[in-house]
Amino acid sequence: MKRTLAALIAVLMLLPAVCARAAEEPEAELTEEDVIAASLDTYITPDKIARRIAAFDGRDVSTLERLDETADGDTLRYYMTEFYGVDPDEVTDCAIYRAGGAEAFEVAVLRMGSEKAAKQAAKALTGYIERRAGDFAGYEPEQAQLVEESTAVATRYGDAALLICRDPAFAEIVLDDCYGWFARWPMDPAEDELMVPYDTSAMLAAWESGDASGLSEKDAAILDKARQIVDQCVTEDMTDYEKERALYKWVTENVRYDQAHYDPLAQIDPDSYDPYGPLFNGEGVCLGYASTFQLLMDMAGVTCRTVMGAAYKGKENHAWNMVELNGNWYCADPTWDEGDAEDDWDYFNVTSDWMAGTDHQWDYDTVPEAVAEDSGLTS
Image (cartoon, rainbow, N blue to C red):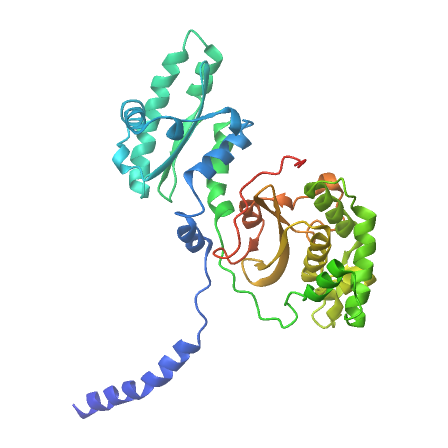
């Protein structure tokens, strides 16, 4: 008994130390599965998935009918029940795109809520494919073959997908990729006292009034240099889009990334974080690019904002811009387009989904969502 009691006391004495070590252990690293699970309802929607599959299959989504929007509730329920063989009450969200007429193309994503339900729905959709092929057999043999070679699949995230398209095998790959592409990683970058947007309010006031006498020597120099660039790139007859494109081109062509950032032992010039470094030294880090573009856009009279975000799955500080044109917001990252020709820009007037899919993270609740596609705006 004494031996048992002594052992119990020893264990109890060890508990505080064990708890302390447990408290010191870092939290488990967030996995992609965790991020996807948290993003499903808000960001990884059936519509986004279906549109991406259709686009990768070579279809212009704007020419397709989205049945779940054009059909009334009763018709949609009838379609799911009688054609798909799926209980519509088990579908929490869906997107159904089809070509119609003599074209068999049809991509549908049904959110079933569980992997088991998704597998059952995929089995039912396979039956639909078999019956659908009969609609074209003898009349449209090419379309009948397209249907016969198509597939229906279930994902581990609870979605069932109908893939009647040109390349169903590739469509299945795109489907699986969508979950990681549209997921939103939380933003938790390291604290950096230099990652604070440069205050340009005094410069902009001087720009409006024409009186720069109250500016500091640095701000006066920045304003004068920025004025030269705006005068060089912008004309009165330009649209806001044309102004934006001209100034974005100047920044990506004339500013290079500060190489000191790559060396952990190097001291980065503080001017690389504000417009002075890019304008006078021809180099800067992301915040320098973003603040320079912001200043030029403000002086050109185009609505713009700087996004203080992150990259590398939320672990690395990063900054870029958003521009408002015709009532729509667009994302633009001059740092990541640095040195590229206009035709090779990957981050000019892109959507928030594009940014999320290319390792950008930000405060999703306070930053506007960019959803419009840039098709070469002219007004």
